[in-house]
Length: 166
Image (cartoon, rainbow, N blue to C red; front, side, top):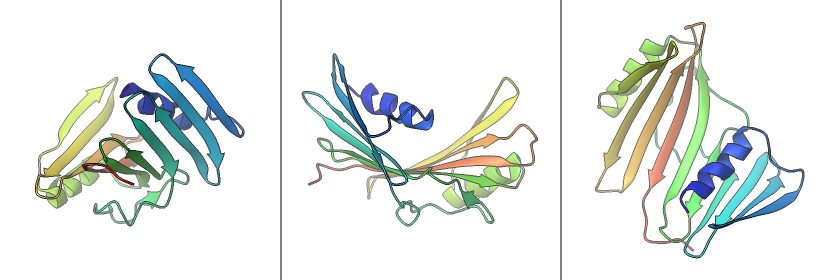
């Protein structure tokens, strides 16, 4: 069942969302995609879980440092809620006119944790993540070097664990 929200989010990222509202029945539950101002709302439900993914202004909620001069990519801010578990996820994508290494090192210092960096087909990607067990918050920064190596894509993700939300 956990794959439903990921599949639905992939539909949004690929621009495959329908014009108004569409529900797709799957063996594990239903995925509903509704077009909204600024994006789409995705709900995945099954016998034991309901997950909603919707666009929204999340930059104030992210609780993550912003790389100096980075700009938010239009339409990239999302808020996801797992109704049963109570997890909430905030996500936004940014672009920075800075070298990959500079951005990675900056986030490593701010989050005080070592990044994991890999290179796939010549494209460098890095993940910097830290969990605060006292608050239940996990802060994650994913970085990808653009092909010209002078710009970096930044994805900021904040996951807040919970026992259920209204």
